[in-house]
Image 1 (cartoon, rainbow, N blue to C red):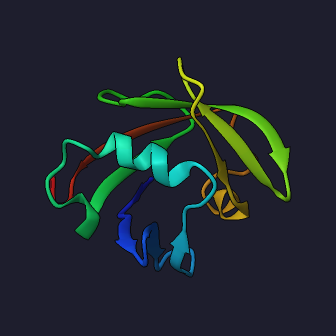
Image 2 (tube, one colour):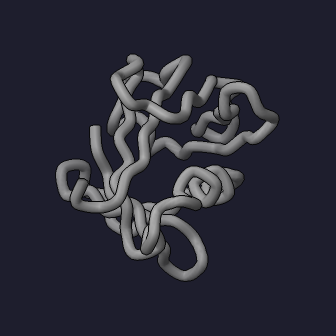
Image 3 (cartoon, rainbow, N blue to C red):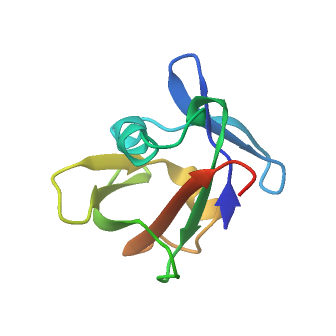
Amino acid sequence: MVIYPHRLHGTWVFDDKTTGLVQEPFVAGIPEIIDRAVAGIPGAADGFKLTISATPFPGYQIALDWARQEYDGNWYRVEGTDAEGWLCPALLKYFDAASKRIYCAVAKKGS
């Protein structure tokens, strides 16, 4: 699955016509995780490609491990770190249930 987050009003958001999400914000630790992940991508604030999957794929860069549920969302921890972030119930538009692990890759928009 691929989405294209961008910065809006100081946080990362994304639009996805297939799910009806418009300016869906990332909150509670996820913006900081994204900031670190895209640090080497010029112009990432204007948009970047984020590929996500419940199974590993060639070129994935980040693995998020499920930590716990809270407020209808789920906390995930970046593998090998203490960095945590909360993913809201919109996660269930992409997965049938909260995945125990989410694999991610970031790239320049258009690549």
